[in-house]
Amino acid sequence: MDENIEIAESLITKWDSTNVSSFANVTSLFHADPHEAKQYLNSVRDLQAAMQHMVTENSSSEKIVVAQNLMQLAMKRLEKEFYQILSVNRANLDPESVSVRSSRSSVARSSTSDFEESDESEEDEFRFGSELDDSLPDVERVSMIAMTDLKAIADCMISSGYGRECVKIYKIIRKSIVDESLYHLGVERQISLSHLQKMDWEMVELKIKTWLNAVKVAVKTLFYGERILCDHVFSASDSIRESYFSEISKEAAISLFGFPETVAKCKKTPEKMFRTLDLYETISDLLPEIQSIFSYESTSTVRSQAINSLIKLGDAVRTMLTDFETAIQKDPSKATVPGGGVHPLTRYVMNYISLLADYSGALADIVADWPLNLQTPLPESYFGSPSELDDSPVSVRFAWLVLVLLCKLDGKAELYKDVALSYLFLANNLQYVVAKVRSSSLKLFLGDNWVNKHELEVKQYASNYERMGWSKVVSSLSEDPTAEISPDQARDCYKKFGAAFEEAYKKQSSWVVPDPKLRDEIKVSVERKLGAAYGNFYEKNRGGSGSFVKFAADDLGNYLSDLFYGNGSTGSVSSHLRGRRGH
Image 1 (tube, rainbow, N blue to C red):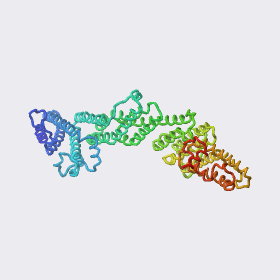
Image 2: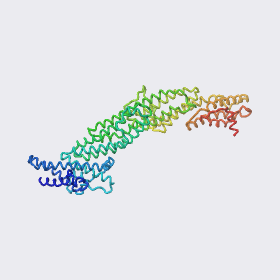
Image 3: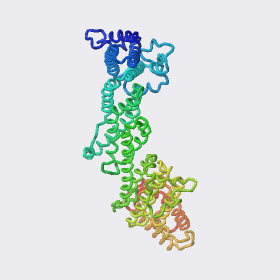
Image 4: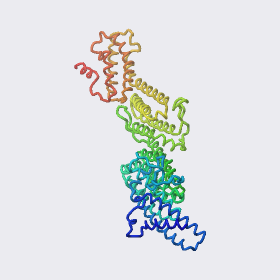
């Protein structure tokens, strides 16, 4: 025991930082002489063992007082070393470097490990490790050495009953690093709801984008790295590492994870849906890591805040979905779309829903326990065959929103005075809906049969348009275009047909079919039906009718090819035809 005290006294006195004139006052023990730093830690442990022995043998021994004084000097020295390592390595102990270090399977060696003895215990092996890989970057090498030196000092001070002194230093320095890191990531502390509601949405959206980028770095690097560093340095005491990780990170984490909840409490409008879903997806994706990093009981409020933000965001999305459905049903527009084209409501709703489908994972969670309250369930035929039916809550929700739109479009079609144009309007709008479903993630939820079923409805609407739009022209010819009739009857038919065709053409020249495929299909179908009837009549009665014949059989196709672009027609068909022939 006496020898242990003498060895400890020589080293502790040599590195007494209270001696202003000493070399030790301006030099780091761990940096200047790793071998001696190792001896210093061993001598402190031996001193502690000697003190414990003397207390049991003779608690009034004067040597105990000497040993206690030496221990206090040693703790002041180690406290200073601890502070210096943390301060000097502030950049090297950034969370990113610590995170990288944690991925190494090997443990860093300390600067004191050059002189390890062959009979090191497993604890010492963990503390000081083996030789560092020469391929390691300098920053990472320094980071690994600093971490292990900090652990060695913390172990020594904690085992000597001086843990509070080193953790106080640790808390001050590391908490400032957490706060500064979040500041540099653009995270603002405690944005109030009233402050957020006063901002323009563009400004709020900018803050959300900043938060989305920052929170991933904060969780995967900042808090993850701090947890690793704290666990490593204070591995000797479960209570200390929990307490001080909590004090370093809890306040900042609660503020960070509270931002989405504040956003969720803002006024709900359709334009905010997708950023709200971005927030939900991000929190949901990071939640396992958040729960792992903040697994301590003392950081349970951090986990609760993240979960509460997730719940509030889900509530906000459900509210906005309900409002969106109501907005479709109550769309006040009474104006018809010129030419029976695609209604702005159709474009808006389908673009909106197709974007929603890209958030199917988040929406599946949000609507899982939120059934659609319908008087009667959607029929299976609305989706497709049973083999491909996806009747999950999110699929039903998408199917219902599309159905609400289609029902609204039925009502808007009735605003057209011309029945043929109302059918063309329905064909155009349903074709747009089907095309959006086919080209987006919506198809995964509604199925191929849904698409095929509604494509047949488009064809039916187009057929109804043809029947209503061209029936007068077709009926102007006799039921049997090849039947024998007199020249006077033929001239009368030519007059009726020309007038009917001119009327239909002029009326429909301002009508539109935006989809090229549908436009061509309708033209081909009309030309086939009209051209066949008129062509047979024309061939049978082409002679002797003179100026009464306004159209040759081939002219019909030329006219029909100009339709459905919405160009309009200011003159008669016959004058237009003369102009074409004049070229």
